[in-house]
Image (tube, rainbow, N blue to C red; front, side, top):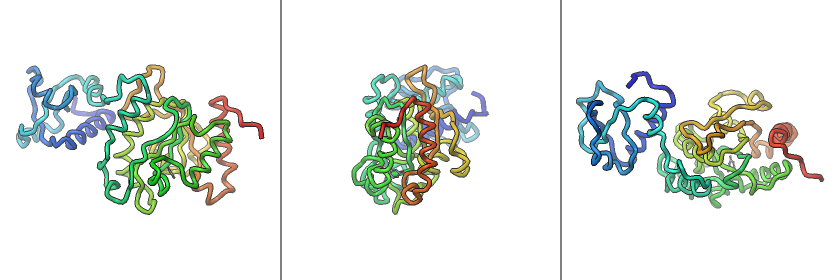
Amino acid sequence: MSRSLSPDLRNALSERLRYYREMGIYDFYCRDAASPPDSAETLALGDSIASPPELYPEHREQMSPRKSAAVMAPSEVSTLEVLTSKPEYGVADPVAALRIIREDLGDCTRCRLHKQGRKQIVFGVGNPNADLMFIGEAPGADEDQQGEPFVGRAGQLLTNMIKAMGLEREQVYIANIIKCRPPNNRTPERDECETCSPFLMRQVATIKPKVIVALGAVAAKTLLAINDSMSNLRGRWYEFKPTGVRSNDPNWSGAKLAVTYHPAFLLRDPRQKKEAWKDLQMVMKELGLKAPAK
Ligand code: URA
């Protein structure tokens, strides 16, 4: 296998290693690429997914075969496909696929937030076939209490924004970058976003929205991996492809993404609502929506 890994493959490998660590598998050994895989060993992994290729050949001797995962040496492309395989792949019904992703998330303890006072995981809500998806930052106290994103004051404003676009809340899908409330509503840490966002990416690839609206700077910067001011980020379209996942639909390769102000910011500074309305009008035009008659 090539020693220089593409960013996608590198991400896939680290995701897979984390998965193995969660299963209690820490050690890997290298099988000669020429020898066929041992089926019993492969089955012992608990699923039919092939194991990661050799990551650190120079450390080979230090890695014991105890609790080991079998190592194969397929081509980089097929390795990527195998490593990024998700249990919801092949599940055509998005309701069922979202349920699988939720089950995979479980009673998540992947980052520190699980022991910092969260009551429950706030997965996401809405139409699994939505053309429009809103992505906020993190659950607040009300969301943590009720298990649904955007149900507090900021949520009421978001619901009104959705209605002003000629839609009902139930017609769109709403989620956050992270699914657990940070203590005292602090801004999510980068590693918390990185740990949680693979699940969001899977939700996006399942729902396959035409348009995503990133609400506020945290959502925009995390989704776009750009560090810029809101005034620079707003007012234009971005092509968004969820990383590390693929959708069931060969005709869907990503969504258009627009950035607007977070509703909580608009509550603090209502003068900015007319700017946010411009952003929403841009989205409405793209989706062929008309504002309801007053
Ligand atoms: N703010 C967010 O970013 N998300 C919520 O769900 C609620 C408030």
